[in-house]
Length: 209
Ligand code: HMH
Image 1 (cartoon, rainbow, N blue to C red):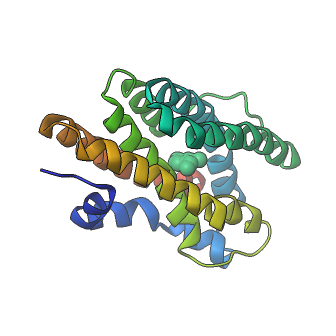
Image 2 (cartoon, rainbow, N blue to C red):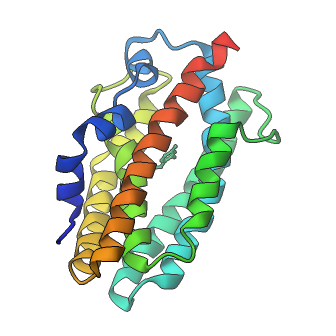
């Protein structure tokens, strides 16, 4: 078998659609998202990105030489992103020192669980996590203030280029991976898709709690 990033997207279109198209995102686009919903997402995504940064550090630790440059650029971008999240939270007077909601915690636990997996599995999961936000924030089209800068962060062409490099890197190692490793990579991809859908729903449901 030869799993590739494109094949995963083609074979799991429904799961990927649920990961990247959600009323939360269309609510940002049309201005109907409520402050509780957006602020819940903002704080929980900051808590997510802290652990995601640790995951990227571990992926870098397992990567071949030729993949280091792209992964380092990803980590540099995450340094800026964590500070940016802190600024955005301060503007809204949000407390970042709160517990992760269970969906966020499940996603962080999943990322931690990737540590002992073969590199092709980790590279596939990393690509999927980044693509979910790249497509999710891009698909609705240009967003009005105050959401423009959020949509741009993950939708901008430079981020799309980065995600494409991650796909190319994952494809190279998937092509040489055992069938068993490819199955693990597919399972990780589907897990990312499901967790992404649940993460949007967690934020969207905030006002109903
Ligand atoms: C839930 N998935 C979630 N948050 C993010 N910031 C990313 C992916 C980054 O791409």
